[in-house]
Amino acid sequence: MEHAISVNPWASLAYLVAGVCFILALRGLSSPASSQRGNRFGIIGMTIAVVTTLVTHVPTFRAGIDWVTVAEILAAIGIGAAIGLVTARRIAMTDMPQLVAAFHSLVGLAAVLVAAAAYLNPQAFGIADMVIPMIGQPFAVIHQVSRVEMGLGVAIGAITFSGSVIAFLKLNGNMGGKPIMLPGRHVINLAVLAGILGLIAYFTTDQSAWVFWTITALSFAIGFLLIIPIGGADMPVVVSMLNSYSGWAAAAMGFTLHNSAMIITGALVGSSGAILSYIMCRAMNRSFISVIAGGFGADTGGGGAAAATDRPWKRGSAEDAAFLLSQAEQVIIVPGYGMAVAQAQHVLREMGDKLKEHGVRIKYAIHPVAGRMPGHMNVLLAEANVPYDDVFELEDINSEFAQTDVAFVIGANDVTNPAAKTDKTSPIYGMPVLDVEKAKTVLFIKRSMGGVGYAGVDNDVFYMDNTMMLLSDAKKMVEEIVKSLD
Image 1 (cartoon, one colour):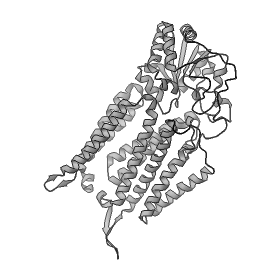
Image 2 (cartoon, one colour; image 1 turned 45 degrees about the horizontal axis):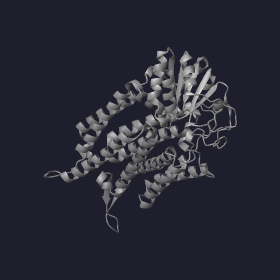
Image 3 (tube, helix red, strand yellow; image 1 turned 180 degrees about the vertical axis):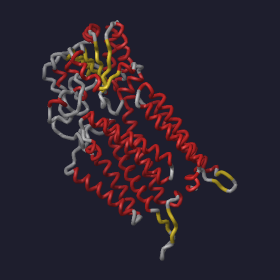
Image 4 (cartoon, one colour; image 1 turned 90 degrees about the horizontal axis):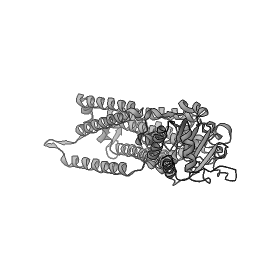
């Protein structure tokens, strides 16, 4: 059956069309203006790929189609689709990073299960020949190339699964955002990785069960070990990197299944995730190699500090903020995770619209790692119908803060912290930040003065002479500012 699939011109053509749709999807998702079109291309491509796979892989008898197997397949698809639909409708945007991490873990687990199934029954996958040893029962000798594909697939899949589980626990608050530092972690990680690679190489000469399952166990362990030393401030890069891992796991399993759609899709996801991770590492002044190795950004100095509430600071009201905003010529709004938690994006857009009616220029400054996942703030602002032309990335707007009347910071802590530029002991040192402190006035919305950002670092902006702290729930405070503007 596998040979027939590989030479089926219609299946190959359908997979090619699906691959083109995936490429167009990625191109569309590169810009908020074309993201909806890109999403539609992705849906069309995946539909073509799934239908083609089902049509070409449905088992048949001489009398016709095996309807029992078809029913089982459709039932599994229905259950998965129902879970995905209900989850997507109920999940809040605040929890989207956790959802992405959870879905990555499922992709990795699927790769592990496919590899295990292929190992236990290789003939069903067309990757083995039957031989009769001198003693015992006949057994299947897996093709050497397939052993390499299987070993890499199960290793990457297991790393993706366990790493994504830890990322989910950190993002969801079940684990602390502080790095968990194990003694000699680099030596342990290198030893485990070397052991995995060595066993994969040995697996090509000996397909014993202990080799395969040891690779699997070590890969689960290294995924855990790579992610726990990573601090909360670096979680967006972790999510992006795990996305890349899930793609490579899918591509490796595509070779095992002889499915070109999986190979194409996995390669696209893997490469795009790696490129995004590289871009984000540059934005954070991190080493790309250290992301792959794990434990980057894990210096303990400066982390876990509490806010120094004994320092003098100024507190303002919604009326004070409304007056300052209405008198400004330009306001730069800096959204962060606090805005996502409060679901304040819609009322924030309303505030921006009212200020425009007063003749105020409104711009939104987006840090590459604001929130808990890449593009988190962009998605929220797009959901609130904020004009795309008003949204700017860090490198395009940072120079404008010095000429701005008001920097309106709503729940963005670490990405506005000047310690990243001045304190070499800080865990965020070297990360480019938004220079909000250079504005004439900084309005900073925060729940209380006692808390710190996800990286556990106090922010000197809170205590500057030109900063007015607006202590409240973000949505409630912005609603009060809108009423005051009326």
